[in-house]
Length: 328
Image 1 (cartoon, rainbow, N blue to C red):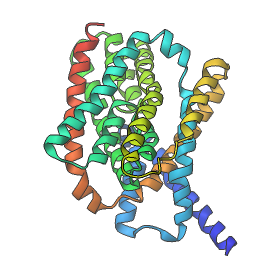
Image 2 (image 1 turned 30 degrees about the vertical axis):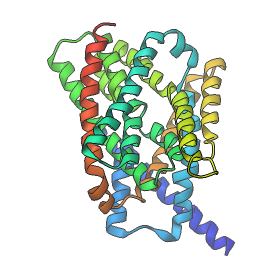
Image 3 (image 1 turned 90 degrees about the vertical axis):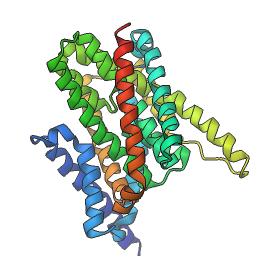
Image 4 (image 1 turned 30 degrees about the horizontal axis):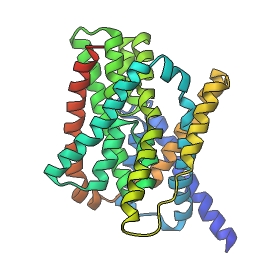
């Protein structure tokens, strides 16, 4: 029985690995390279479930990818941060980032009171829009006790929406005259994922890309205090209903430790690049596992209103940051 479980476990991990590799390879092709491997993986997983059904025999391995690998990816994600650089070189930008994160979450929640979409899904989209896309959603979802289907839908929507906005930014930069540094800060303060910032800001050259990533990483840094705030709020709400409080997401401590390691210990660029590639791979594997939990009925019944709320929030956020960055 153990051998059978072990075989199915490995096949499940292998399945998510295979889809992740195919998604990464596809992301190098024309058109697909604008969509990105993350979005390709999520869409592929959703389509697979729709046409072939959920692969229950290898569920243990898929669950391992969607939960354990996801948390490991978030821990390694901390190596992207240099706390010293963010606090000292990007202190003004960090204040802008605080405003961006707060606005994205509060504004989308305000919109949801009007359109009455799914509360949990809208909150995940607000976090993904305001902070850093899939990584932020993955970090906050255990605190909110979100369903895997909600995580999958929100990650997919953020990935696709962010890609559309990135391409729009690139087009706007080509049409209208913009200072490269201004464009970089605007991209870094308003686009959804790090990959989206790279896609857009690269059009402005190295100076634009550098300041854009610094601005974006400030938002990633805010994932730490934001998670603590959510923990406090959720614990207080649940303490009135049930005696048991939520489990602390200890992987966030790993995220903080990795950030500290990259801040105080010099790590060769080549090693950081290898770890970054590995982090991307296991994050995409996790998203395949999560995507398999999303059904088309979920998309039809739950996704439309939250998607509209995120679209409006993203547009308003882009306009406001464009104006604010002009005064910096």
